[in-house]
Length: 446
Image (cartoon, rainbow, N blue to C red; front, side, top):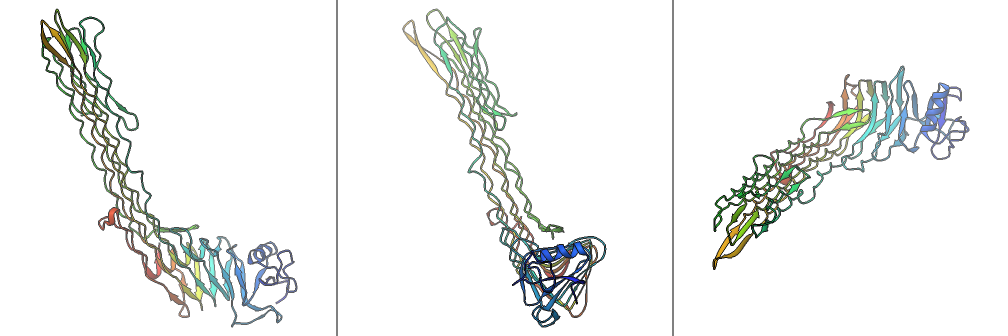
């Protein structure tokens, strides 16, 4: 072989500023590939050289290793060229296009995943025609998926209702009922207290959302002892729906492997507002009372559903996406897959606000105590707790994963894999919404 045929690369003493000839080799495969593409040449790499990089290979490129760079760049089948990709990066990407891409006498080692849920992939080909000869492709260990994220302890609580208002005389303004407490975060509102207007104690209003706590009855007796009613307590919200565990084998794309996360639990529903208290009106020649009712407390917001676990990463030696691939004389090795993450605990619903307190007025009428009172508002209902979350699917340990055409391998190919990663458990170690276990096998269609 001579300089006219290819670009020469040597990791120990090469220089990327060099011309890429036998006497002036470049140092990195990335630089060699760029020069080879620009000049329509092959790449020739020294054997027993350790290239610590990830490479992207255009279609139709040919890379040959196992060359003795200190002995006239002769081929030596006993010393393959090694390439080690960094963590969380596909070591070798083979791009789509015309022409056959060839990797010959090259040992590819993908780095162990470092990020949670990260995969380790040795070679990925997308819409390419590829031949891999006399080498090896090894994936590293994948990482476990992350558990679902936690919520703050509880959702927004409902504010308290307002205490009743008393005007203890017959004269002056009518006593208006207190306005219901409003939980603007989720739309729950306590009922307004009844007003004391035109000689009549009015009923309190119901809380929201409907059907909220009923308002208390107002007192219309205009007598010495009033008998209004407190507002009713709002009903609590309901628990959110449970999220399913992540099931299925996932998918592959040009970015790598994509697993199945656990589903989030549903939100709990909002607590209903408490009803407003009834009001009172009494007035005679020597005593009076105009008393507006207290307002109801607002309901608490529903809690957020538990967040689903994230999928475990996969260890895959060779990924083929709609490609035509032939492998011969090569070892394909997949290592440990990642477990799926667990579902997180759901958020508690917010507590309902207390209803406002009623008041009373005691006055003397012809030497006798006369009691006038207005009534309390109902408490708001607690928000419903969020639903349970699902665990995520475990990752796979697979030597050949593909979509479209199945790769062609002959009897000289060695395939090794480990077991798949375990699926993550649902919230509280639940088995019911556990994610599916990953697979350990030679070939897997995704």
